[in-house]
Picture (spheres, rainbow, N blue to C red):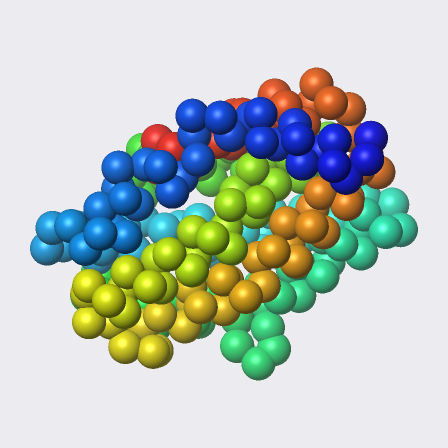
Length: 203
């Protein structure tokens, strides 16, 4: 497959599940979230953010030496820093919105389980699961950062996690597409990406 074909398959998988069309994100963008919603979101999102480097490391270890593996390792290097890991940046967002430790809810448990289960199977399947979010992530992060600035009085430190992702996620998306281009069949990409899109929508 070509990169354009992979991108087209991902677009098909996301039909009706684009996160910026989700009511929660639309309210975030418009400044309509109720007190406590950002705090609860941050508390739940942390479970995913903690697991993402594990998922990327697992996928990389399952790939042979070559371009696809290099793409995944580049993504992992960004997650871990330097100078600061993304989990450390996320802590700034948590503090800014008053997040407190919570038990993992069913939606984030399902999401992390999907990433974990995909990582234990074919590397291409795991990459398709990851790609369904990565291709949306830059625009999502930019919108979140703007909403935090314009409607929720969140300062620079609280927005930094999203600002960083707005600037780098386009590269992550392209790396993931390029890796899938070398590994995956159309059916696998479409099916795995749709499962990921559904899980993200529920979260």
